[in-house]
Image (cartoon, one colour):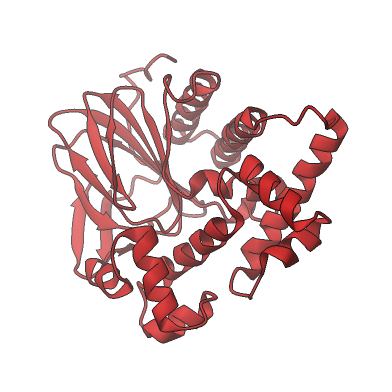
Length: 309
């Protein structure tokens, strides 16, 4: 594990602003450092943070003792050194388990949306991504060291600090993406060039789905999009993306619906805007993937709260 940051370093915000996080219902309007897309907290308080979501990725690094996070209904107990990456708009709650220290990073990802490779990470973030020596021994040390560099850049606030933060963040996503691609079972009948060609086709397809998930995309249409037979596509999709095509498509639609449920649109409007043909299908799928109905989910988003980091 990379060394802990020098304790002499003062964890003051670069703009010396207040450190209050305010929720509007469960939606947090992230208070980034002015003229940036980043906010990082050194957190040692002995209280948690209620159920919330935001349009930024949240990265939590447990530095001392344990910390608990419930993300999309799944509970994670973080031990020292564990890293949890929570994708944008995923409902999550932070639970303090006693005295301890952790870093909380909020980073906007909009600038990555035009990168085709970045779309291939979407399947990895259908759930929160837990990185530690047990789950990701090949990349953990490097990812941890890069996050420590990001934190150092942020709190020292040197010129071009934000550029450096995103440079290191790109390295982290590259490590995660390459590990996932290399872990996929290899087809001995395919050359390395053909496997790379298949990767490029799937990267293009995931970008297409990201833009058109609300359309009526069939399995056959998806297979035709990258030039495969339906049966070969079905097998290869599961091999490359680690889930079925329809499960992935529904996950994308449900994720979009979760973001919309924080607003005032009706359930029927949300259903049709996210690609469901009727309200019954929407409610059934939503419950299957979240263990609650859209109405119950919306109720969990109500209420206001302030929390000092």
